[in-house]
Length: 239
Image (tube, rainbow, N blue to C red; front, side, top):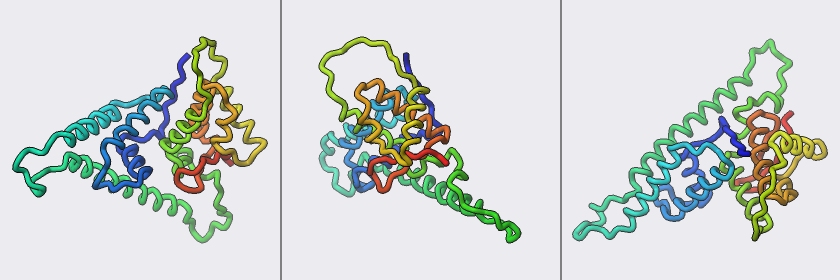
C-alpha cells in the first residue's frame, strides 16, 4: 500500500534553496554549492520516502546545482583575471534575489490585507480577534513544510537501527493516525513533535503518522508553531 499526500502549502525549489541558505547561515552571494547541493538532494530523498509529488522543477534545480558545482571544479582558463572571471553561481544568485523580492512583496501585501481585514467601521463594537478566524491556507505561516521535514528527518535518525528486513502487512492508515494525534491533543493542549514521534518504534508507522500530521495541517484541524527558528515544533488543536 502506498501513501500519497498532496499539499497546497508545498513550496517550490527556490523556497527550499532560501530555506537552506537561512538554515546554514551563509551569504547568498557566496553559496557553498557542494554542501547546499548535498542537502538539497537529501530533501528530495525525504520527499520520495513520504511519496510526495516531487515536481520536475525540483529535479531541474538539482541538476542546475550539480552543473554549477562541476563548473566550479574546472580550472580557470589561462590568462583570465579575477575581473574577467564569471562566477558560475552569478545567474543562480540573481534568480534567487529576484524570487526573494517577489516573495517578500507578496508577504507584505498579504500582511496588509490581513491587517485591513481587522478594520471595521465605528458602528461595529463586537469585533474580537479570535485564533479561529485564521484561514486554513495560512496555518503554516510560522512553520514551513521544510521545517517539518527537518523534524521528520531527525525523528527518522532517532529510530532504532534495523539490521534485518521482515515483510509485514501494513496495519496502519493515515485516518487512524490522524485520530491518534487528535486523541493525544485531547489530553494535552500542546504536543511536541519529537515527543509524539519518540513513541513510534516502527518506521512505516512514523512515516504514516507524519503524513497524517500534514493532512491535519492542510485541513485546518491542527496548527503548528515554533518558539524560535529550528526549535522543536509545537502542535496544537485548532480552535
